[in-house]
Length: 366
Ligand SMILES: [Cu+2]
Image (cartoon, rainbow, N blue to C red; front, side, top):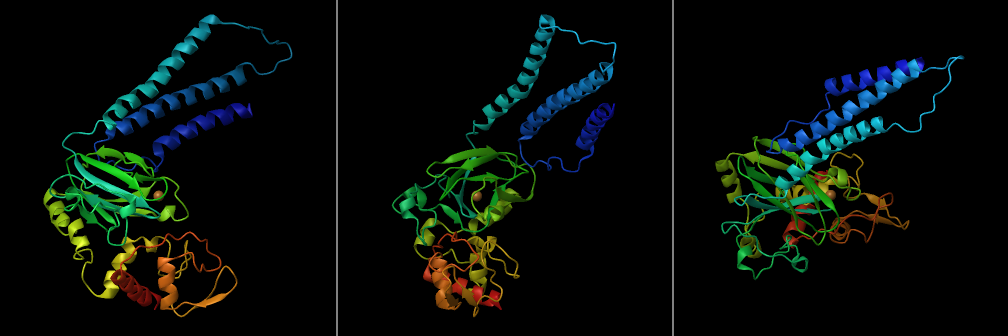
């Protein structure tokens, strides 16, 4: 009898939790309501089966409980019941799978007028590229990647000259029109995910993957990495800003083209070296692993770092001065501080950028 009550309470509790839980889907901000519908249908089918099976168990346990004068019946075959169960299961499975196929059909069919944007993932940050006035991305090659050319664009490709390289931690998009997001990874598997947009896709090294969506709500959303990609994975974030077309165009104008970056103009946002360094620390993803407030992170905190004596993993000690910091930025695994894993990716920075970052690091150190 206890088991019967437990089963009934389990059913009531689960249904109540489902309808009263505050942890339901975050409000949608894209055209992919169909993805939510598919989820809801699967929920309904599974929920119905869960309730029916558990209540049937509770009923059977009560109705056929042990009695001295009662004996079990042996019924090896019941074709009628088997047909019913087969038919029910088939309908349930079709109801769960068919909507997914329809949504997938739309998901892989990108509208022809979709605007292009590229998101590049690397441990542990996101960067973005727009095709510029010609609407065509320049070709890329990993061998071209350098401090002046972080996206690896082919300098001889005319299509790439006007590509806009948003080095920063934000991707801006205009509301209302379809967007095709192409995805590249510089190192390992990542996954581009904005929960409010619903659609998402893996980044696979050596491949260009893509997905599309239409933003339907103005706002700022977190871009997350949804594929475990190393110890800084939890902090691999940036912002997606959905805005009116005019605001988007105004922002786009402030982003440097590839030609400008090659010529050495643009790319630095002006301001004092400390301000430039602060922007770099955000753009380069340094702050994903290094805290500014003394908190523990994947790497040592920057607070009070300069002038400290650190013990290295080989037991020797080192004074944290400018030379050591510069070496550690460019060649992070040369002298790793004890207690930390040798996992920091080398930063590719121009000399000016390195100086700006040093200026900021010193001011952050205090
Ligand atoms: Cu990642």
